[in-house]
Image 1 (tube, rainbow, N blue to C red):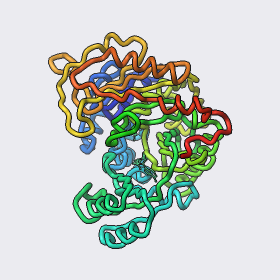
Image 2 (image 1 turned 180 degrees about the vertical axis):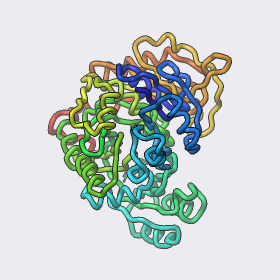
Image 3 (image 1 turned 120 degrees about the vertical axis):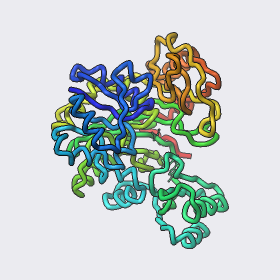
Length: 441
Ligand code: AMP
Ligand code: GLY
């Protein structure tokens, strides 16, 4: 089967790498892809909003399956457009239609959905553009920390956690009163602050059955010890000890199952990945957010652990037979360290020569912010590479990932040095032991 993979980050490089291992794959096309994905398929250019151009590409290349990496094309209705195109009959899209993608595209929609289906999440209130006064009043009566979220897609910039009231008022004024984030902040949510440890859980579904995929922990802040501004993610570890059997059982029963059943009962078709961003509050899972895709860099840590053929799972979606497929997972730990450009997530320089990739033997290096300049690999983004290594446990995986990361160099190479250290510290305290209440402050 010929497949078109959409996206060009580390997540999509990892997906391309994984798909290329399948005997069910004939040709893989990636758009836009990156210099890493050309090792597993062919990069092609197409404007996804230009239905004629996309249709032509799908027909010319005999593509039978379109796999969507990022959320934006899904929220934008890419799946709907392909499904409605009579010339593209029988083309499967991995990723939900716009209605299902609302789980990520509108935080208000996601919250209302969770309320309807009794899915545990932080309490919240929603305020519209003309309710700035009410929102400020609400804050004046509430206790901090204050969690303020723009309703729409805001490229990771839509959430402000304000410790003080002044900061909260500023965020509300910026979002509802001003122009910050534009239409994404036409409606704003104020949420109860949840104390606990975050974990990213994933499932794949054909809309009827679903299969849980490995869990991962993401490291969102730029600095060691979770300091500094939020980024797209600076590293990942899979599995996560505090997401033990008991906790994951609750995730399955109280979150994954009612979510898939709820979508079905509401007549919202959903096929593809679902990312459940969770908070472990005293051993109880709460949903912080849904995403309608895999995480980046979580994908780089979970796909290497997936022993099953990803094409086989996608085929299960195409034919509505996911229930008959198996998800087989490697027991070992994977650690991913993201190498970024100095200055990220603010301004950074690009065009720096990257050397040493050929020296890496004991890890996978997935590319994201890279480009070819006169046939040489240079930096071209904030997050440049993800280095993923296995270990028999977290300690060994961390050592292996950092040893490989140290072989790579470029001007301004920046990374966290503490990926996974919090999990090791918890392990030492026995927090990962069965029955232990993990992550409660
Ligand atoms: P989101 O974009 O919704 O994932 O929010 C970004 C980050 O803000 C999350 O990864 C959490 O670290 C934090 N966060 C969001 N909502 C809450 C909440 N209700 N309580 C505590 N932290 C939160
Ligand atoms: N790493 C978090 C995300 O992909 O949203």
